[in-house]
Length: 408
Image (cartoon, rainbow, N blue to C red):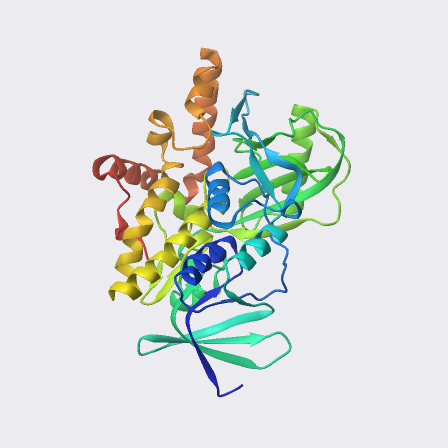
């Protein structure tokens, strides 16, 4: 290990969209910013790729037009369709028109390059240690020696299983339930599902998170469930259901399936984690995830807020953590509103009009949908989230925000 320690203003761990948004803010403000990524760039990213309208606007405003190579085919998505066990389906167009279908391998790389930050790929985060007002960050280049950096600030933008988060809160991963989310790809024989929409099933027998949509001439069949169940059995059950109930006829799954661990809970029950001292956690590492499992827009906005908080703390010599938590509360409100049953029932927290789509149904179908949604919510009973969701929902009504007392 080299004894030389290079000093920079900010180190960001993970070459994600959250990292790109934070780095863009920091680089534009003149702070020397270094991104480290354990894989070779451009790197594969497990993701459906359906971006929300809000995320699309952020990319256009901050990075410009999305290059063609950063899109899958179909290149855009019109909205979402919810499917229920009663066989009622509701299609909802996104507010503001279609949104891009991102190819995360190339869209993330494009945004990272456009941020202007220095990037070290094939470089793993090993650990960090507080030294006065700085962090000594230890990294290792693939096949090489350890390299250390001195940084005033560190941002963990490294996903649900964040090594940065584990470095400051070693016990946190044991405090929340974990889910496995996987998707397989099929050649299509016949698929009546409209390829302009992202399809989501509120069906407790299919799992905690079930979806399907077209991508690059194939059909994705995705499943999410409590970690420990068998992915292949779960997937086959969903594929059989789609054929029996929706007439979706697919060839056997291709060999290139993929999956990852996910932290669904924080957005539902306001248990976000934002860091400690001069280390910030952002993006999905913090717990941000929209209701249909889209985390890109949350990542972009929370990443930008992390960068802005560091700039503000540097310019005005303010304590970083209280400042970040004050600034990030707007993203908490926007994200947790999407899971809040009171907001869903009486407001419009999503970027497609669920209340209007529900009211357009015949009264019998409306009753079926509400009954099916309730049964789906009961799937989470084992995690004892029901009371927590309602407590946070009522606190939102009373205070106009979600209390930060439960954040780490």
